[in-house]
Amino acid sequence: MGARSGAAYLDGLHDNRQVWIDGDRVADVTSDSRLGRGVRSIAALYDLQLDPRRVDRMTYASPTSGERVGLSHIQPRSVDDLIRRRNMVKVWAEWSAGMLGRSPDFLNTLVMGCAANAHYFAGNKAEFGQNIQRYYELVRENDLCLTHTLVAPQVNRSVHPDAQAGGEVALRVVDETDTGLVFTGARILATLAPASDELFVAPAPSRSYSGVGNPHAFAFAIPVATPGLRMICRESFDIGRTSFDHPLGSRFEEMDCTAVFDRVLVPWERVFLYGDQEYCAALFRATNTFTHSIHQFLTKNWAKAEFVLGVASLMAEAIGIAERLHVQRLLGEILQACLTLRAFIRAAEADAVCGPGDVWAPDFETLVTARSYFPEVYPRLVEILQILGSSGLANIPSLASVESPALMADIEMFFQGATIGGKERIRLFRLAWDIACSSFGGRQVLYERYFAGDFYRNVAAHYVNHNKEPYRRLVQDFLNREPSSLLD
Ligand SMILES: Cc1cc2nc3c(=O)[nH]c(=O)nc-3n(C[C@H](O)[C@H](O)[C@H](O)COP(=O)(O)OP(=O)(O)OC[C@H]3O[C@@H](n4cnc5c(N)ncnc54)[C@H](O)[C@@H]3O)c2cc1C
Image: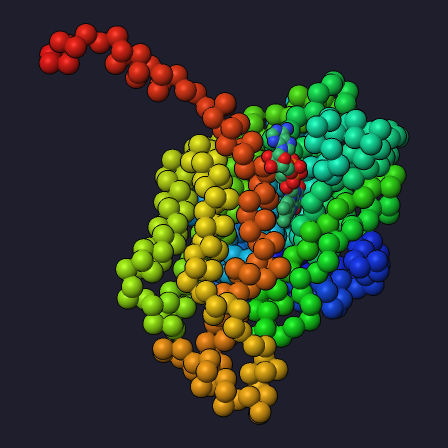
């Protein structure tokens, strides 16, 4: 099949999936008023990769079928391939202003990273190595869209996931049969699940579950439409408003879901890890699997920061504050965030290494550092929009008012800016509001803080696992040096 069109992708979502929102079981996720526009934005990404002007930049020839397949599936064989992949990711991220955290390239790179480390899965059981390789090829050749879930529901973080609510909460194996494993329990937080073909379930990088033969130690993937699997959505932030009123919420609702498993059968050929908690706990530590998806989402973050910079600088001009020193200082802070992200990405590519299976991966240390940078910086970028926008972010009548004949003169007189008319100023400030103040914007901040795991524990784990010896030796050498030797 190869790289899919938007229409082919939407067609694939007409299955018997169980997606629940506001108490309703959704009949058709592609047309549902709360989900459909977000789903169709994903379809637009698929169309974009086939656009004749972009197809060379967005796809490559499959090594098995020869068909054009999406570049986010590529197993990079050089630094140039990493850069090609990043350029492709940037096109999708710019199209969505960086607001689709879970565009399909995110999990495409992760699954590819797993397949590049197939030996690791084979170490748990020989068949698992083959399973992950075949799964990667299935995803690549059919251009499938994936969601994933790594974490047990919150319930009570002071007890082990196995023990929550008497062991009834966490996803676990309840039966082992000739055909596969049977799962019951729940996982969070499957973003994009209603719009995904497949659900990838893996252990959380930052959490390890103890106990050999643990029923919580597994990795697998199944279709979202698998019997017994239901997705429970939060309320939608697409409330049916125009793209003038909610420029982001009306387009990029990617939805977060709790995945509930009710005796779900996972065939053996879809199992990638099982039964050995050490293999599960170390997956993201002992392999460079995750490195590839950090490379993807850093590129998305870069595009997002650049978009915020564009909005902030237009706002500053629109209300005549762009020449003020403290405003330039704030705008400069956003600019430096953009350039820092670019520097992280380029440094990681420059220091890339050839890993297992001759697949090149960007530098791990650089990317792990960058992963912890954005959760701190993005809330600040949003804060800067609030500081610059001030009342302008609240004084934003809706399109109905803007187009009301009775108000048109008022809109043009009292809502005009220094450089633009009333309607255009409201349009711009509504966009800033959707980044900085709306429920859509609030969820984006939460997403950036947490989507790649608990920021605090990530930074702490990075420090704990990093080799501190060279730095300590520097200090020891300094302390042991005789003062006179400094003059030698
Ligand atoms: C918008 C959004 C989308 C997401 N999408 C996905 C997705 O698609 N797939 C997916 O798998 N996950 C997703 N996540 C979940 C994400 O992986 C988790 O939010 C993240 O791992 C943190 O876990 P938690 O939310 O359960 O927080 P908790 O672990 O419950 O932490 C809550 C607070 O308690 C503190 N805390 C809890 N336990 C400890 C401890 N042992 N030691 C120290 N401090 C502790 C934390 O530091 C934090 O401040 C998403 C999250 C968000 C917010």
